Amino acid sequence: MSHRNWPVLAALPVLAVVAAPAWAADYLTVEQAQHALIPQAQAFTAIPLTLTPAQMTRIRQMSGTPQRTAQPRVWRAQRGAAMLGWIIVDEVIGKHEFITYATGISPDGHVLGVEILSYRESKGGQVRDPRWRDRFRGKTLADPFRLNQDIPNISGATLSSRNVTDGVKRLLAIHAVALAHAG
Image (cartoon, rainbow, N blue to C red; front, side, top):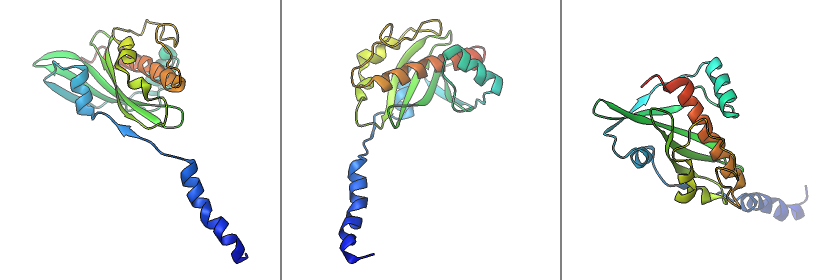
């Protein structure tokens, strides 16, 4: 290889770095999200949960979205002896990177709230908008969860909107299949 090609080769790694900008923001810790979603709770207890293949199949059937891991991250929220609900921390893909979010679910299976913990995309962070996330409050597995119908699409964040919406419905299916009677 001639020395005339070295400047071109030396520039390639720099171009690759410039061509693939990384952007990430962490907004809440799991503990902060827990308290934001169920503020009246005095304790959050991690619940070891391993879904069976049959449960994972049932979750997909109920939500229309596959469950990627057999061990979802789940906490039981309590005030004294009273069970107040569940917190499930999950990840969905945005356009290219994962969005980490937490969903609070009541013992009877309705959404108490959704919080975005980490957003790693350069665009589409509007899913953090409280007005958009509030649209999930009160939803149950029986609700349609259709983007542009009961959950609004966010222009410029369509993939993030769709995937968080699908993810929340999937977490409600996890509740129905594995947590509803575990309180």
